Length: 97
Image 1: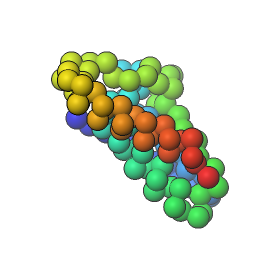
Image 2: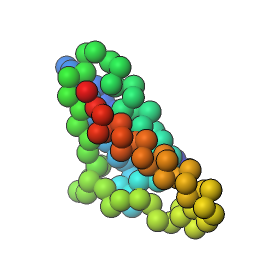
Image 3: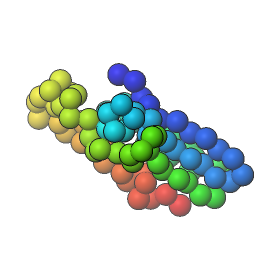
């Protein structure tokens, strides 16, 4: 499962790109985890003054990658773990300083 998150930093600006354009930047579990990790990384970098979150290509994000739901969310336990990862990433966006 590839991550498809990239980070570019320059002059106080951090640009985080959802890079899965073949699927309209649908966010898979690895991407949710990497997004959380990347936001945590830049939130501790005092040189970063602004973060831009964007999608590669013509679209921002189609939402969650539904294809992986068949294998990664088949049980209640799996769904709870999946949703915790999503919540962690969304909370990191919400709490960005």
